[in-house]
Image (cartoon, rainbow, N blue to C red; front, side):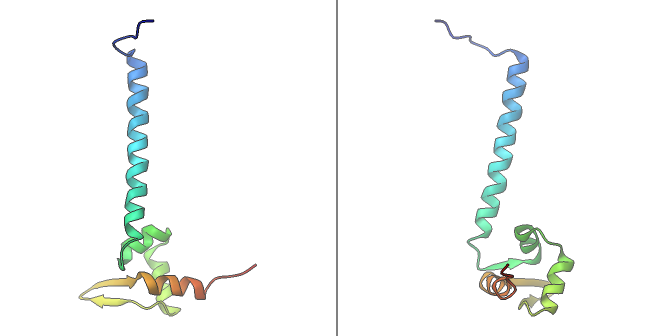
Length: 92
């Protein structure tokens, strides 16, 4: 049985699109995994990690979420974030 040397253009484009989609998904998951190993997060990182807005994070600060501020930038400790989420867990 002979193997074709080239792919038809439509197959080549489909394969390329699939490879790009797999790459993007893998990169997204890798970025999320990297966030799980940090001790401190920026507001933007917490927003992405938990899929919440900056407004929600500011509301949580009002509810007692501790943060550190250096110049104008706010940082949230991974440990404190998890503690805060545990304190506000709802058991149903």
